[in-house]
Image (cartoon, rainbow, N blue to C red; front, side):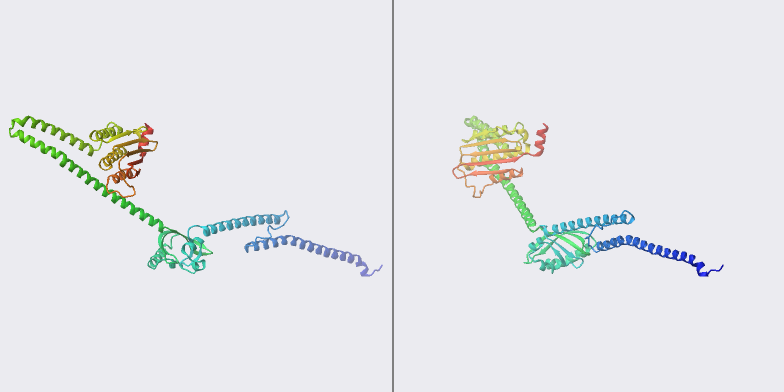
Length: 443
């Protein structure tokens, strides 16, 4: 049997063709599947890459990236979205902080500015500096730090800047010059910063011109007060010496002189006058002893062995015994345990001084003294019915000035009320010392 070769191979060839076609179909399908899978993976990667590029450029729009998958690419997308959200939050926080700092800089009530380093050109300035120095913002930004200083301080300022370049914080007191030429004294606080990527220095300037003037005025006032106190002390000492001299010369010396004459009569042997001379000499000696005791009592500091109240009563009774002046004394509400020895002495001397003033100048018939305390202060009032005086006219005597200085030394206050023909009233208030209050509370 014979058969053509082609016929014999036809079945095999058909099978082979089918295999080739199937293989081609499988290859095409595989390529299609591979392409689809590649696009399924590369598309979200392209989205993530594009989003990352936008974030790097500062564009946080079109976020988060929308990729709904649960494979590794989906995990990567979710992590990327979380990272971008965190970056966005950090960016918002930084912007808020920057706005707050900018607001703090611009709205600060004290002058502030930023200068470049090391050129010292002004690159930003707040509203307070513009108001205080009198420049517009454009004018200020065209200036250099040297331009707001008096010529004599420029060289010293440049030297200080060179020395301070290694530091980060700086404080000094400088003279500044305003636009109108006024020179002011400022306390300067400076910090080195980075401003828009470049080294700079932020400066706060506190004008202390008025403060320094006020301190100088206070110091001058204190020196003047000290001078007045010293002068008053000297005058008081001179007055006391003068009073002692008068007492010794006009009173005690005269008594002793007459006593000497009586003793000379007795010495000469005049029997008729002997008894009378000895008697008068004896009486004069007693009188001199009394006068010296009285004078000593006025000069020597009272010991307050009993109480301040009793010491004041003794003094007023002695004054009433030697003159027509009537003295009323009231100390209801007075707690002596709160008053220390120094304050007691001040009160005693003030009463003594004012009673002497009344006796010498007031032509008064009555004086009323009131003394009382509360929880913090002691109060003294001395009122007379004398001729009074005009309080608006500076008094030449040192009595009232001495009273004022004694009370001021104890941080107290003095009020003097008087008119011509209406007498005089002195009201004194002095605080207790803290140790006195502590002792009382412990007791």
